[in-house]
Length: 151
Picture (tube, rainbow, N blue to C red):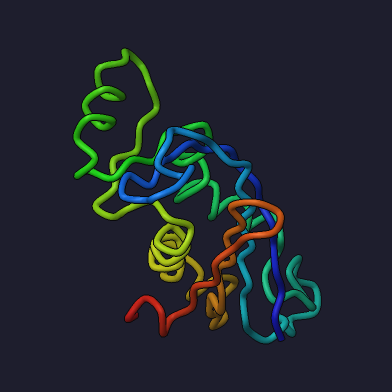
């Protein structure tokens, strides 16, 4: 069985090598969908009985390990030196320096690799993060799964 939890956050970025508008500093209202795969817990009397995983726990794990770090931050590639240096010169600015270009594809892949180990064993049952879907806009998104992340 598969379940999906959606979370949203705001972040800025730029694609330094892009030939069009995305080379400029800009931001998005990202939506992150996490799809977990596993069997519902069969433990009468347990608070998680009948659930693959409590949706609030999915939110807690995703928030602690990813969303809290990226929300209202500027995601910048470490090789984008002008922007990276500028953002780091702003006192108290929330800047996340990445070792990859912050395209939605790369961000989805990174999110999957970061979160997959966090969901492997919860409630004493085997779970698997089956997919991360990251929406950059309502009409544009990237999907990442284990085969995309070499896990």
